[in-house]
Image (tube, rainbow, N blue to C red):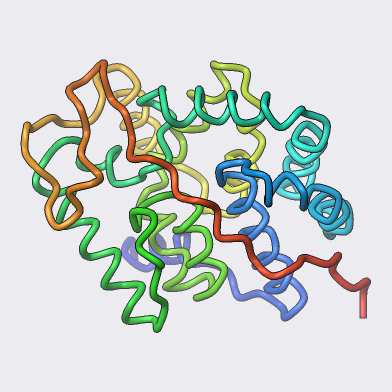
Length: 247
């Protein structure tokens, strides 16, 4: 009975077609907002803002609206600087999810390989420009493959997502709204999750000075000098359009 109850809490609820469509759009919008704000993404801001404004009301949509308003009003250079400061130069808000679970250990390389194999098994190949655990990539897969197997990596790395959200909140970054929107789509954290996040925030992930083959480009520097891999250009989705009204 306990096993059934735990499964019920963590299993995504069955969605109506309209709810499923809105959820896919929310995940894709989160993915876009968390990509590096290059010229192509900045140029798409009017369409992006219109799409967010047309989302059905929900806590996630409200959070994304706050982030989209900030994103649309910033100078491109300011967006680039803020992105680098938040995600490239801060270990606690890196977007590489397996780092929070495995740190600088051999297990991280295996986790990256398993994630890439999951993508291939679903018929989806990433272009190789970014590691498979980069959050925008994980979000694209979730939107593609659906709430069950597609969102499984997000649920697996929920504690890392919580830590990123806490770090962005502490830094006063508007990107915190994107993480908050994403977290509303996942099962609520357990007491064990919250305790683990507090421990991660205080002590950091486990450390082990090894390589991360077969993903050597994803290496981590010693604690305090972490520099994530160079950002790949964002893989923009097809043009977004506001969802249709109620049918």
